[in-house]
Each structure stands twice: as C-alpha cells, then as structure tokens.
Amino acid sequence: MDLYELFGRTVGIDYLQLKEHAASYAVSREGSTLFLFFEKSNGAEDWRNNFDFPARPYREMCDLWFCHRGFLRVFEAVKPHLLPLVEDRTVRRIILSGYSHGAALALLAHEYCVFHRPDLAPAIEGYGFGCPRVVWGRLNGRVAARFRNFTVVRNGRDLVTRLPPALLGYRHVGRMLEIGGGRGGLIRSHLAESYSDSLKEEKK
Figure 1: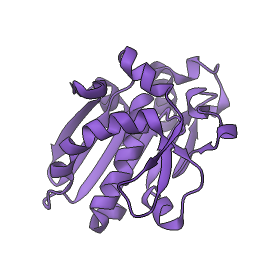
Figure 2: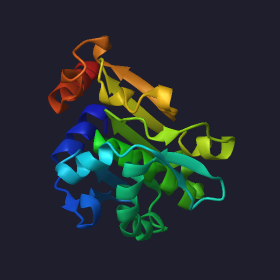
Figure 3: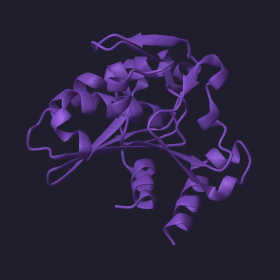
Figure 4: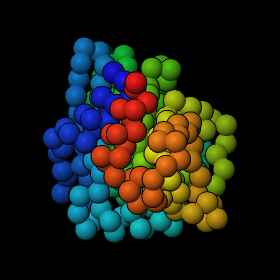
C-alpha cells in the first residue's frame, strides 16, 4: 500500500470514539498485519487538547522523556484498548497512520508498539500526515530509536507541522518526508484534499 492509499484509508475509515477525552481510533487486520488509525480533530475537546501543550513527562518507561500534555492525555485513553491487539503474537507487522491531531496520536502509539513488541521493531511503520510536534526536549538514544520507522509527512508550508514552536523546545522525531514542493499557504497546505492531491502527484 502506497502513502496515497494509506492516507485515503486514514481519512475515510469509520472511527470508534471513546467517551474519555473524545479519543478516536480504528483497527483493521489483514492476515498478520495490524493497521491502527487515528482520527483528526473532530470536536471542541480535541481542540482543547491540541492547545494544551505544556510538556509532560511520559512516566511509563524507565527512560524518562517529555511530550505534549494534551496529546498524551488523549493517547492514555486509547492505550488500554491497544495493548491486547499489540501483544497478539499472531501479529507480525504493524502499520500506524494518523492525520493532524491523529498523527500526533499515531506517533505516540508507534513508540508504544515498539516498546511492547521489540521483536517486531523493524516491521512497525508509522506515518503522521500533517503531524504537529509532539516530543519536547532531547531524547536519549534508546528512546529515539523507537521512532526510527516513524515518518512525519509534511505538505508544502503546512503550519500545523510547525507547531508547537521549536522555540518552546518541541521537536519532530523520526523521519521527515516533504511533499507538495513547498507550495501552498500555511493553512491550505494542511487540508486533507491538499494532502491527497500532493500524495497523488508523488505517486505518478
């Protein structure tokens, strides 16, 4: 599946919305491959979490690191639902995808999957379309390695991929894939149709 098709599934799939923090995710299974999708902002609570960006420590790991407080709050509502899926030993590959707000959740979920399934680390791929910055401060080598197969997809001048500001200590992790040739306005570049058009162009 190429990125154009993956993005189409990400914005088109039916999501399950949890009551807690309005977290939205979807699951698909194809043979031994598990797909995990995370939805863009779809309500006032999502937007409140988007702008709740003081850094918060992620305390579950022995290696302490910091991330965006609002995104972590939403992801913690999803985690209990993901664990049995991720720990299923018949799963031999995991693909995660999210757009915008959902891209931030996909990034956190990617790290979570690698942490819980280190045996699958090379076969875990994450994609964040229009992903904001989620991680605050520097990561040690062990934590940074968990994001090695996560790709931030940035279309043109997409403003969301530049927030929260780097001046506040936030940074992208994993790899950055630039599409759209740097064209488009700060807002328009973030629209789903703009991502779809640029990814379709890249596919040619």
